Image (cartoon, rainbow, N blue to C red; front, side):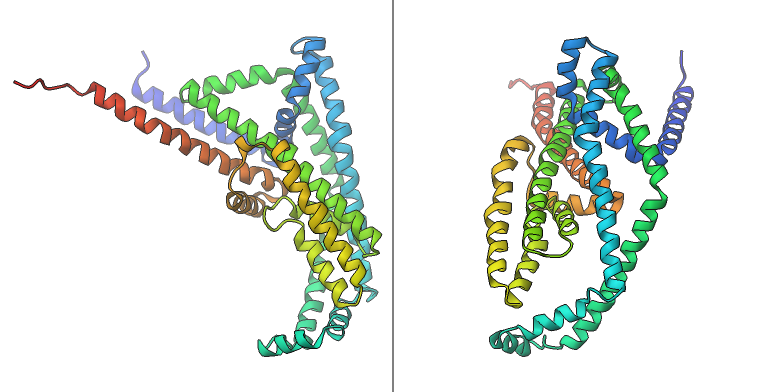
Length: 363
């Protein structure tokens, strides 16, 4: 019979080998993470292929892999390549003084109406020379940052391709053996089956909502904004469209952080017609996309308060990088789900304790 010391030694060994295993995954944690995400998102499609070819079928898993490549991986790779090219071109224009942020600010100041200047004077916000110097310095720093990132991305192309290969390899086995892996994880979790299933279901629901819903909405909003910028003749339409895709993942603020300053600039520089068109597109089209599509794609049962999504998304991005826009809301959702289970169990535990308490009969 196993002694208590032997049991503790085994638990210590279990913890050490688990930490060591996850340490081995750190260099490719992004690839493994996105393999799990894609396996959850495309699981309904995999189920359909399994009904056609049979469970644990290599053909079904390969077809699911091909669909993922066509729908997700190829478009994302093309967008990343175009962004690197667009960012490098903008950096070159800034460094060659073809695009001068200080001159843009000076033109904006010259076109400013008198009543707005009086308001700025009242609040001591009219020192445009200092603001121009700060803007030029900030533009130089941003251009240097973008250039450094572009060089880093180019030098890490081989690693990026290797990560894609690892992700597809892991994804194949997750598609083929996903049910068996899920049952093994449930069997190892040191909680009741009801709690395990509740947390796993919440995990899968949040992943689907975040990826299928939020990313789809962000892509639609950023695409509309980028096309609007291109039609209106605004430079760097692809780059600004990508920025809108990224910022659309944040509730409340979203893509307005890009198109609203652009509209204000158009109004201030006398391009009133273009400014009106951009505001109409921003409010009437981009803004309505979220209200119309989010309830259908995300669903009310997985919706969290906007302030929780905003804080968890920003926190996740600051800690985990680009993967954080999924990891942050996921951690927040599991946090809320775990506390909801604890809240729901408290009355039941109190009732069981009351029922187990011996009753004293009156004499």
